[in-house]
Amino acid sequence: MSFVVGQLDRIVLDALTPERRLRLQSRRSLMGGFVTLHTIFLFAMLPTILTGRVLGDLPLYRIWAELGFNHGVWQGINVEWVYPIGALLPIALAGVAGPLLYQLLWFLMTVALNAVAVAALTSGGRRRSGYKAAWVWLLLSFILSPVGLLRLEGLTAPLVIAGLVFLATRPVLAGVLLSVATWIKVWPAAVLLAVVAASRQRVTVILAGAAVTSLVAAFVWLMGGLQFLTGFVTMQSDRALQLEAPVTTPWVWLAAIGHQRTTIYENLAISTREVSGPGTSFMAAMMTPVMFAALLAIFVLMLCALRRRTTDASALLLIGALALVGAFVIFNKVGSPQYMLWIAPIVAVGVAQDWWRWRVPAYLMVLIAILTTLVFPVFYLPLIDGDPFAVLLLTGRNALLIVLFGWSVRVLWSLALGRTAVVVPARTLTLQRELRLD
Image 1 (cartoon, one colour):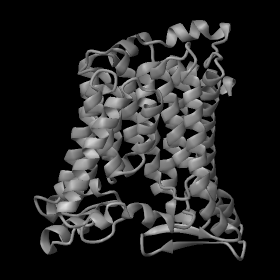
Image 2: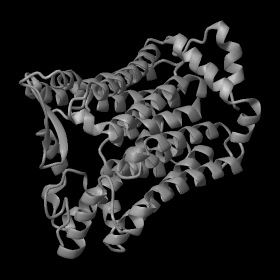
Image 3: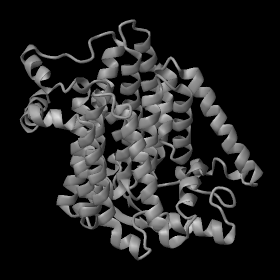
């Protein structure tokens, strides 16, 4: 792996000449890149916006918003819902101007939160080390745009970036942002768990999170839907192995080679593709306890590492967050392309903290994002039909996810044992100095 990383280092060095690196660190270039990227997004979606249509998961979101505004039936309040109740906020906000403007308002919310993320990473353009992270985030946003622009993860990911950045200086705000993100989609709970394990601001964050949760619960109670507050947990527990989940990969291959008892089918109730075959029911039942066991093991490793006086708490927090979120993805029976936006925010903040340490996750994340977009939407229909090339793309993506998870656990293990987490060979020191942009 070190050889591959070295070659990628060389490619980056050749691509980013000193003049280009200097240009990328200017506020004007970053603002220009941000505006250009989101202008491209706008033009790509303009036919949809002008005709009042919606893409991705937004047709379902719009239906939920219309049910609430027009018929008084709110998801998570009047009926059980697959999402935490906080997801109702952006879903409803996008519908306040009517169904025809739903796509436009959702896009504007995404742009605004991406701007917050970039501003947080760079301290409003003042923090030079944050420029690398901002460019990495914009690159990943571009590659993952088919899901980032059209799903709730496109809103929660920037919130997590801002929450992690503000943790050291504004812990109350960080706690609020991370808690709000968790009440929109569950995955930021893994980041909060890392904060509890490693941050000196854990008490403040916990209290801020408790305040947010109390307000959410009080609102739902006043609306008469308290019985549905945790419905998203029970609704997820009955799901089968989903097509793109890493654990499903062996059965996807069985379906691709025509194994007669293994099939890829559509779950019409929740509009997902799932896989059934020998052992899939057992594996689906096992994944939740295995996931929680992995989360517990990682949490214990973080506590052990924290006891080492040589361990930097901020570095440990991000490594632990990457491992915890990675466990959420690797050991999940549900797998969707937007899950890559669970990992990307942590990698972006890690790059802002220490490019040299986090360049490996950054390289892996770019490759994972590319393969993810090739799987969905480019080759998704062939994948459903069991096309071997599409299955190979999915297998490669899932294998890289495991490599990234393994990297985070390995570094965490080294920290727990008091060893040097990142060893830089002497022959790479010159390259390291050349690659640094600070």
